[in-house]
Length: 219
Image (cartoon, rainbow, N blue to C red; front, side, top):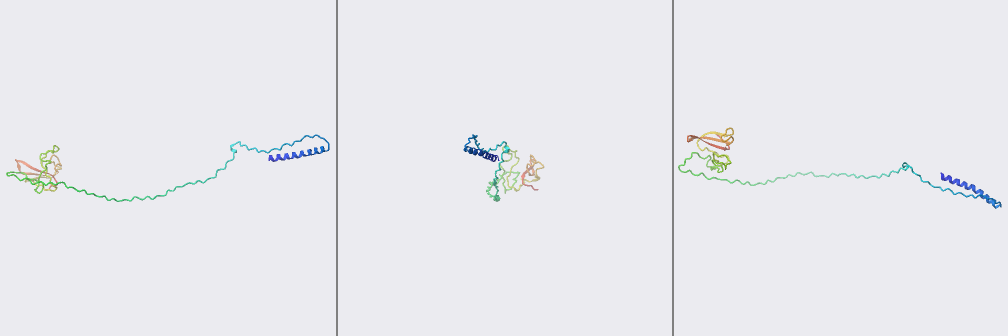
C-alpha cells in the first residue's frame, strides 16, 4: 500500500507544475520578460522491498513434516523340517562258541600186589573201580612246604558220588556235618564226616578212622 500512495502523490505534483510553465512561455512570447524560478522536478521515489528481519526462533516457519515413507518389514517364517524318527534296529548278538578243552585225565595204575607174609590192618576206602592212588601234593605228615598244617591223613581225589568204603570192620560213631562239634582243629573243618571205631584195637588202644570232605553221608 505504501508504494501505491507514493506514486499517486508524485503524479499530482507534476500536474500542478505544468500550468505555470506554459503560462510563462506564453508571456515570454508576448514580449514581457519576467524572471521565473526554475522548477526542477524531483526524482520519483524508487520502490524498494525491505526483507523481513527475524528476531526470534519462534518466528521461523515450522517446516512441513517429511512425507511418511512406508517401511517394509521382512517377516521370516520358519518352515518346520520333518525330522525322521530314529528307527530301532535290533542287532542279534553272535555267539562265538569257544571249544572247551577237557582237562587231561589220569588213569592210575592198579595197586601193587601184596608181598608174601605182608599183614595190613587197613584196606583202601575206594574200590578198584575208582582211582586208588593218593594225592602226592599233600601227602601224610606234609605241611605243603610250610604253608599248611601237618597232614594227619591222605587225600583220595575221586569223582563226586564215588562210594566210600570202611577200611576195616567197626562201629560208626559219627556221620554228618561238623558245624556243631569240632572233630578236627575247628568246626566246619571236615564238612560232612564219618568216624568209625574199629576192633580189634591196636596195641590195646582204640583205633578210629575219619572220612572227611564227603559229598553226603548216610547211615
